[in-house]
Image (cartoon, rainbow, N blue to C red):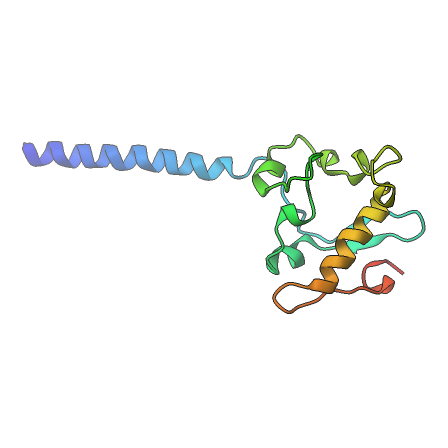
Length: 137
């Protein structure tokens, strides 16, 4: 009889554990995620291509490109908690009211951030720095 109680208790514990593990896996699906497909960033004259998977696979973190209004890097958790991708729009801050006149447009912000990072590189791998490297022909 004692062995039967132990078996039932073990099964009960395993069942409850499986329920919670299953629930935690389900919650990871919610929130914003980096797009898997290449995105096109519309420009005034020429649009630019950008691949999140390429950059993430190189070890570039979300916060190296995306930051809050206080210039603090955003984590993937911060981004996942956002209601929509519009909150990540550079133009929300980088506009005519931005304090640094050299960074008052998304184009200025992209060129400053992307070109510098592409020159410095990651683990010895540099990115394109010529217009045709990122911009759609």
